[in-house]
Amino acid sequence: MTTTSTPTTSTPTTSTPTTSTPTTLPGGTWMLGDREVTRFGYGAMQLAGPGVLGPPADRAGALDVLRAAVEAGATHVDTSGAYGPHVTNELIREALHPYPPTLTIATKVGADRDPQGGWPTARRPEDLRRQVQENLRTLGVDTLDLVNLRMGDAAGPRAGSLAEAFETLARLQQDGLVTHLGVSNVTAEQVAEARGIAPVVCVQNLYNLAVRHDDDLLEDLARDGIAYVPFFPLGGFTPLQSQALSAVAQRSSTTPMAVALSWLLQRSPNVLLIPGTKSVAHLRENIAGAGTVLSAQDVAELDTIGR
Ligand SMILES: NC(=O)c1ccc[n+]([C@@H]2O[C@H](COP(=O)([O-])OP(=O)(O)OC[C@H]3O[C@@H](n4cnc5c(N)ncnc54)[C@H](OP(=O)(O)O)[C@@H]3O)[C@@H](O)[C@H]2O)c1
Image (cartoon, protein in one colour):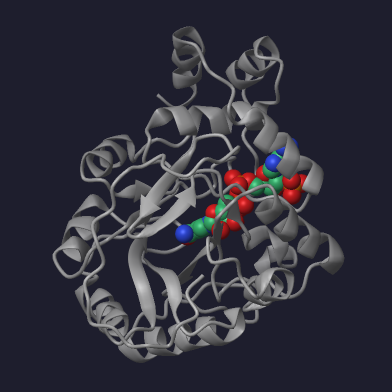
């Protein structure tokens, strides 16, 4: 995690795949710009209270999960100031600050929360500047490693220009408040538009065994060395269930969740995992099983789920 407050106007380097640092986590590592991260990361959203609002029922358990993820070697944690709001950032700070220099914390801007639990769009320049400042404060850093601009809404990506919002983030990057930029919940056209404004190190969209609208985008990004970070890798609030998934898991002597993660890791080297869990046992189960080697027959069977 970056702690320097020195402003910089330099342009981040382009992402390239690497497996240079040994990790015991399945999938090896990937370069998010100049930040090497384990492909097995952790998504903190569901550590907040019900509906991603307010504090967790089991605060100590939430802190344990974050510490267990990092102790297991994960160097990529995904969060947002909108989770809680601010709750997952504050948990991350309490559990992990001072951050190991190897840890990359990715956050998101572009939405606020209302008292009913809605996610109202907040992408005017003043909204984004405020959200970046809130993330800096709640995470306790001078520079955010990675900020994703979240577009669209709860129903998914929406066509339309992201130029004004992404240009605002690019200026904050030039001011030294953000190291790398990404986009989330976006169309392929919006990815291209963002790349015309500033380097994009990752795209975070909904994708898993059952939801594969982004098959082509994921492969295009792989060719360009840009990470694809599927959100809801396990199906989100309604975890994946399918006969094919259970059958492959049984054959492989592992769990359906582990197979879903193995499939993503095998899908393409630019796929980074940020599965969520409130349970240290589930975290360990997922780490233990996500390296399951799937045969061509397994993959063909799993491909029937989403195609
Ligand atoms: N960019 C965006 O718009 C956006 C939107 C949504 C999410 N995200 C990011 O994506 C991350 C991942 O999404 P997510 O956490 O909502 O969904 P997810 O990773 O697809 O699934 C999490 C769910 O799977 C369950 N689970 C995990 N491991 C399990 C296991 N071994 N056995 C049984 N159940 C298991 C969890 O329950 P337990 O807690 O009981 O283990 C939890 O209910 C989030 O944390 C967030 O950082 C981004």
